[in-house]
Amino acid sequence: MSPDVDLTVPKPGPHPLRSRLLALDCRLFEFAAERNWPAAERVLPRLSRSANHGVLWFAAAAAMAASRTPRARRAAARGLASLGLASLTINTLGKRSVRRPRPVLDTVPLVRQLKRQPITTSFPSGHSASAAAFATGVALESPAWGAAVAPVAWSVALSRVYTGVHFPSDVLAGAVLGVGAAFAVRGLVPTRAQLVPPARPRAQVAALPDGEGLVMVANNGSGTADRVRALRDNLPAAEVVECQPDDVRAELEKAAAHARVLGVCGGDGTVNAAAEVALRHDLPLAVLPGGTLNHFAYDLGVEDVRDLSRAVQQGEAVRVDVGRFVCGEQQGVFLNTFSLGVYPELVRVRERWSGRIGGWPAGVLAVLRVLRTGRHPLEAEFGGQVRPLWLLFVGNGTYHRMGLAPGRRLDLADGQLDVRVVHGGRRPALRLLAAALAGPLTRSPVHAAVQVGRLHLQGIAPGTLLAHDGEVTEAEGEVTLEKLPEALTVYRPLTVS
View 1 (cartoon, rainbow, N blue to C red):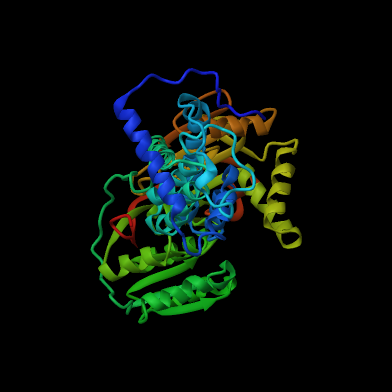
View 2 (cartoon, rainbow, N blue to C red):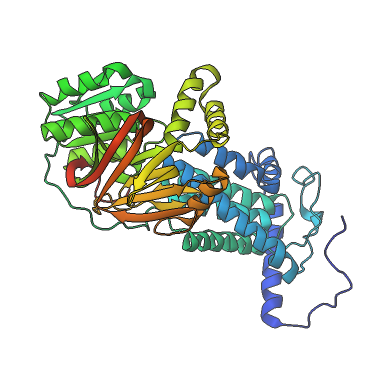
């Protein structure tokens, strides 16, 4: 590769202000080069090299995502998106707009200099732009993670002057551009704090400063040990009952007999069981996410122990809708979704193989097995006609599309069932993909989506699988679904942290 500094380009004419600024920039560079920086000779050059091609920031994002908290994952994704926009701007516009040569290294001690000197133009600093973009993007989503990343980003920017590859103004301009890129990404994709949901109905509940009166049933099968330990630290007077998955329902019934607030820690299926008990005993529910997906808790606004503890201590709660289904003598509730067709079949195949080959491989195998089937898993009667279907999805509240699948709900008390149907026909994979891309409230020959308060299905074939909040059972004959508006009281912080 050849340098992109074209020495044949004529130098710009005299400009007093620009000349003074450039002279000041050179003096600052020389001042920094002449200073003795204790303990920096081993650290800053290595840190500068580690940030080449964004490697340092990709590693930081991976470490944040490994924390398994949704806030950290969102912050990591936003940081990388901001970095990508900043890098694109630097490489397409910045470097080619101001073709400034790199500093002369005569005043920089040899021990500081990089082994491989960059050959691109100097203004602005791409490393500084990437560092500022990533740190700002992370901070906009999670101030705590942003505070952890900021010193590293500052050190990377500083290292570019320390190693002699940039003037101070290059670093400053790059940092400003990086911050701008992060805010531009926020304008395109709002942060969680910007997504203000409709005002949910507030509920009057007891404030439990130390947790006395809260009985928390934790499903050990969901890997809840760390969360339970943190809950005990935050709410020392709360009663915590840890049990195996088969004992969850019995323990919930025991807890409801003497609790002021019924708590549950587990996945969506465990939360579904707790909601059913809480409704029957007319108790407020406290949900601590402890499973893999935790759709209800996250849509509610409870992401970790801090969120739940703050709500319980301050007595903050809302009323949410509950979905109910009746199928013959079988009935139940759902907080997230109810489905017939492909999804229940997928869950059944996945559960059959997950114990042998692991969860993710079993999920991939289940998708392949279901989509290769030659028969439609569901037939239902609409308007007197029996029609084949690949999928009937019913959401408790309107789901807003994020990617290829229904992502999240902003309002858990909108009084609506979000119904989506994928019609039968050839090539189920393409039909399901088209339905996912189209989102809610659309109609096509492939799929349909409507919002209703009640739904009645007839002609369900015996043995058809039914899934509600991830739990699978069988259905046949008629199925009726309806909303129970604002039926459940749930603790949640009324302000986003």
